Length: 129
Image (cartoon, rainbow, N blue to C red):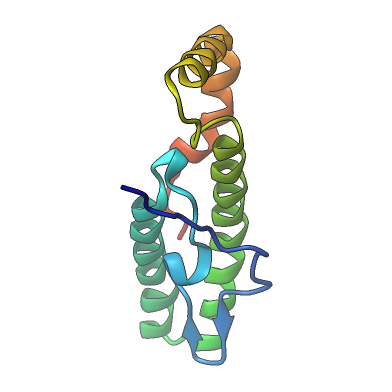
């Protein structure tokens, strides 16, 4: 069985147009190599509430609130798209026992410290408001 996967490239210049905003895969589809696609969509939902819903309800213009959402979400999610693509390049699609064994051996040789540091910015997310 084969399932092709795709990400969204090139990156969008904005997730906002007029009174609407793109979220989830519509804005930042990413490869599943980091397991962050659905999670980033949930983050988008939280940020829509915090950065758009609440401020608009309190009297701020929708355009200003959507601009803040875009400024907060686009850099993070586009970084995740780049990293998931990079992770895919190092052998996510390797086939054959020998090639898989070589990839796995090479991955075990990567020191834990740099790997943890590289993933920390993705995993240490806090909702902005």
